[in-house]
Length: 196
Picture 1 (cartoon, rainbow, N blue to C red):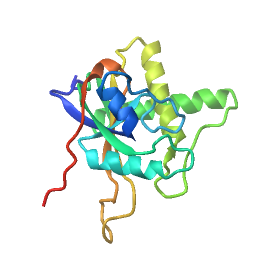
Picture 2: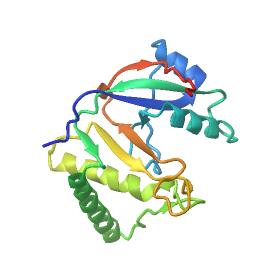
Picture 3: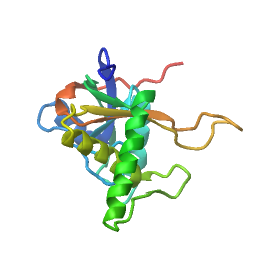
Picture 4: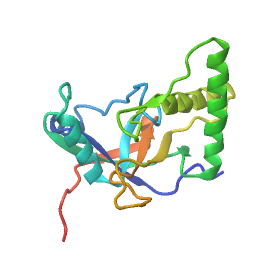
């Protein structure tokens, strides 16, 4: 009933400066990703209202050996999330539970390994299980002829605690995965300023 969010959302995508300029000038589009480890499933990823986190991510990625990012940049997007699988909504979490059960049952029936989330830190940044569960959810909705979700929104607790026993971590963020490109109403170059 409340899966359509009211109003527009500002999303920020970390990328290379050349890609950002090409998108802003209408010469290119951001491309949907379908990596098996992307935690919200297939689509275009944005940080919800956080250009600084998008830039920090792009900067971290730029120093990796095979990175496509040479000069980190951020592009802003005006988003209408449409029919959104908002994982901050309690009711939507039941869908994940059901999709996980379906995934495990299906894979075990064919003696196929169930994916796991993994990583070098407690953050488990390679979210193969989460991705498979989300994609199973979308596939099950298609089979049952339920309305497809246009976007997925979730909170990610990342990094070390900010202080002893803190419930807050260094890199907490809300991410949005846009599945339906019609959700993107426009792009803009964000003003990245430091305020005192």
